[in-house]
Amino acid sequence: MSDPFPILAIETSCDETAAAVIGPGGVVLSSIVRTQVAEHAAFGGVVPELASRRHLEWIDAVVDQALAEAGIGLSDLGGLGVTCGPGLAGCLLVGLAWAQGFAIARDLPLLGVNHLEGHLLAPFVGQPAPPFPFLALTVSGGHTSLVHVRDVGDYEVLGQTLDDAAGEAFDKSARLLGLPYPGGIQIDRLAQTGNKDAVALPRGMSRKPGLDFSFSGLKTAVWTHLTENGQPEGQGLNDFCASLQEAIVDALLIKTRRAARQLGISRVAVTGGVAANSRLRGAFADAAASEGWELHRPEMRFCTDNAGMIGYVAALRMTRGERSPLDLNVAPGMRL
Ligand code: KG4
Ligand code: ZN
Image (cartoon, rainbow, N blue to C red):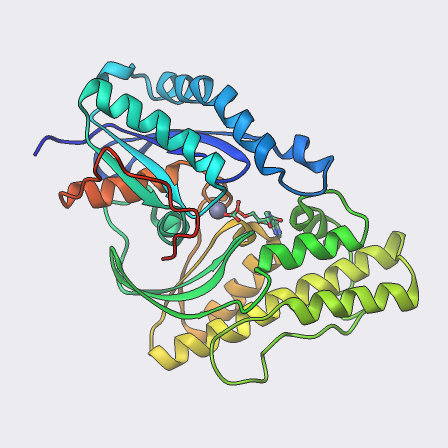
């Protein structure tokens, strides 16, 4: 079987058009992300139809930039990795159709990658292989889960959100507070100078046994608080953001600590867009010190959606001999 390197990876599952080039050993030679966030902000969330049209317009330029930064041309490629799910169907189709067309035209191997597996292994992008086993908390805009990761493809989901994802809890609360989309980063910024003990908010499911999460109660509590007390402003807004952020981070930490103790595992990875949150990073660093964890987090550029993590999974799996059929279809509801 031919060497798949360098691998061109493509990610178009939501509102970021991304391409990366991965070399042998999982090394990232380039990673380009072009975000549509400003366009969707006007609508308060991602508009699927608009997102897929932008992917179609941007993908060639984003791929060209990734190749240029890696210092290679299309003819140097050895394989393709592409997100095939989960995500918005129309968006996934753009990336997959591009990759399939290219793989067929150049007779190159193709691998369809699960976007969640990309997030799961993102803390180890650039390393020859992740240090198995480990416990992974994935916190993104669409997913929140605790997974026991034993090997590539050997994943046991221990718990997940029963309703909103952690990123949704940030974004929906931010919307109630009148902050622009995506709200997670706005809350993180305002919370820097806020008092986290100012407003009492629930830590969903933390008193119940088990490892699942729930953030819908928090959203309701935010709505109730705002209805009763009005929209906070100035320092009051900063205090509210700090309290809200603390409630989300605390709920995540309580379950992660519980899972690590239950498994008797001390290697913990925190990954996904919400792993960029500064309070989450601080709180998990503190927990790592007190619990004796070896903590792994992605570089900031591999927290939110990117093609580097997709290419990394493709590199690991293609090195093991895996290939996808060239008539691979998208799987918008794909699970881990
Ligand atoms: O992983 P990601 O880019 O997309 C999904 O696959 O869902 O995650 C996006 C999510 C959004 O909900 C966004 O608000 C959140 O990550 N996020 C943050 C921060 N940066 C991004 N949430 C809290 N604090 C941040 N600094
Ligand atoms: Zn994602």
